[in-house]
Amino acid sequence: MIVTPVTYRFDQPLALRSGAVLPAYELVVETHGTLNADKSNAVLVCHALNASHHVAGFHADANGQPLPRSEGWWHNMIGPGKPVDTNRFFVIGVNNLGSCFGSTGPTHTNPATGQAWGADFPVVTVEDWVDAQARLLDTMGIDTLAAVMGGSLGGMQAVSWTLQYPDRVRHAVVVASAPNLTAENIAFNEVARRAIVTDPDFHGGHYLRHGTLPRRGLRIARMIGHITYLSDDVMNEKFGRALRAADGEDPAAIAELAYRYSTTDVEFQIESYLRYQGDKFSEYFDANTYLLITRALDYFDPAREHDGNLSAALARAKAKFLLVSFTTDWRFSPARSREIAKALLENDRDVSYCEIDAPHGHDAFLLDDARYHAAVRSYFEHTVGAAR
Image (tube, rainbow, N blue to C red):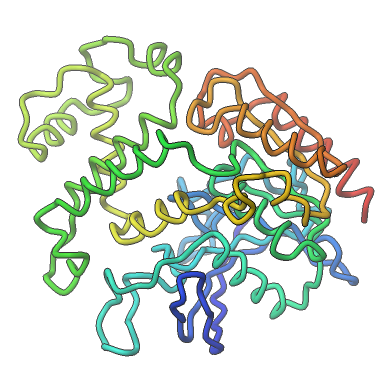
């Protein structure tokens, strides 16, 4: 399944929750399947922190052949015959504003200065992203979504859709998410941000003007984040206290990572794994984007305007919900999904809840699990599909 991104340009400025106004901007989009005649089968998939519009399928090389390792981040979930079946549904993936995968963000040119936005890119929130996505749907002629779906930060966007545009979404599929971040989660994000902003190559966020990249800070930020995505059981099973290189890793490559970090030899397998992940991340992700998106995570809290009462906040929602959580996900624990379910039930909303006993931690929402995929498949076949 080859997919090609399309760029949509919006010349009308977008007023942001911060009070700033983003002038003309672009959103990069990929779609899968066919929009039906009455445009009732559209499913919007919202991405998490370091993902993008490329939710499924493959990108092609110059000869039109699938590029190796170019599959979308939710390729096991979305496609022909998959839980979100693109033979039935028209799936839309959007790269959010402020990201670094094509949509307008800190690496793009600020029309007011002629230089990269850098640290001057305005603060964006989950609500801002949803507003931009709604404009995209207007452009595509889609009035109502069959479903909005996302995991982690993407799940927060799905919840926000049901509150900002309650008449435009029939179903919300919220996976491994939460109604807001705990203090511990905010703390992890702040430590990661401090690693970036204290990198000598950060230059106050205007590193592109100096011809540098704060790779050291990004590596550490990714290492911190990656620890929180995995469960203790998975770490012990996969790495334990082993002193050898992980299967398939090149010892020379590990030695090179140790040299880059100016440390002694990498001894533990978990060390080599985290450093490999950090090094890879620093080659493709933008530091200012990391700061922006983790802040959007921190700020999301629909109950804030209702004195912390989540039930009152979710009273606006009209959609039916499927909530999915994973037992070993300590960053977005099942208790947080149950908070959402409880608040919706207090408003007499239609809610399905599925808690999967899986060992993989927060990353479980991206992995193959027969029970998890069966729950999503059943919901789309018998609830979302039936509603159409």
